[in-house]
Length: 426
Image (tube, rainbow, N blue to C red):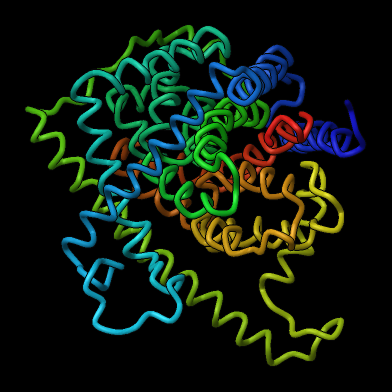
């Protein structure tokens, strides 16, 4: 049954694409076929994963797998850190067991394990086949050339800088539109390692949390491709003049080498995330301290979260969020942009169940599930400066626009989910 809330989401799709079209480098080259194909792919994926019983069983199994992975990781963490990580032998009485959930011990270690497993699955060719399968789908349905299609697919599982590594030898030859598209898709999705971490944060507050997070990252890839192609349209002449083939594979010496190198990569990611969270949360606290010196507004102190909530309330309403939840949801979207999606997911997980509509929680999971934030701008400039140094100035010139497109891509994904009946996700 089509409701008013679904009409909100339909309006949101039109507004988001219209905004990108208004800012396009060539408004005459709107990709109509790509728009229809990308939205259809998103709808079919969501309907299939949550509407077909066989695929729902797969989704449920994925959720159980995520929980098992988190539990196994916690065993390793407790072995290393003992009672500090919630292990046995607490030397004092625990009055609040919830306080034992320490982010550094419960979430960041999951990234180490997932990165090690991802490297192992790549070495065993399991993840490689899956990535090439998605790349083939993107190549045939969205008109991408082979190497960019492979990089887009790899980005879904490996991350915003790690994905393009698989076609490093081709980055210098990509068209400007293709390079912009890769940066945008990187900010539209999240890495496989962080998917599991987000699911661990939300599992007690959102039914099928793992399924939603995985689906969100997958369907945001075509959304990122679409908005990137609208803002920087495809240059068919340049692409036809320089045909590309698939790039070389990433190679590990052995299974042990894959696990060790994967764990090492995961450590760097975890350290970067931890350091970024400390710095950005501290900066937000400083800003709130400064804002606290100002007079109260509407009977409450002025904070960064309140300001961002007001700014982004119209955008989250367009995804289908009820008006009464728009300010809180808008605040979460603002936190994602300024403090990273990790902080936003933590706040979403800490939001009481009765504080927002269950549908709002689902929609915000999709809207938050992407790397489009200020910190990612620096990460992309640093990463591409190493991968393709001769195009560093070009990357710097387009990275902020890519962050804008990636930010809207996750909102587009949320609006697509908002088109569907809420009963589908019960």
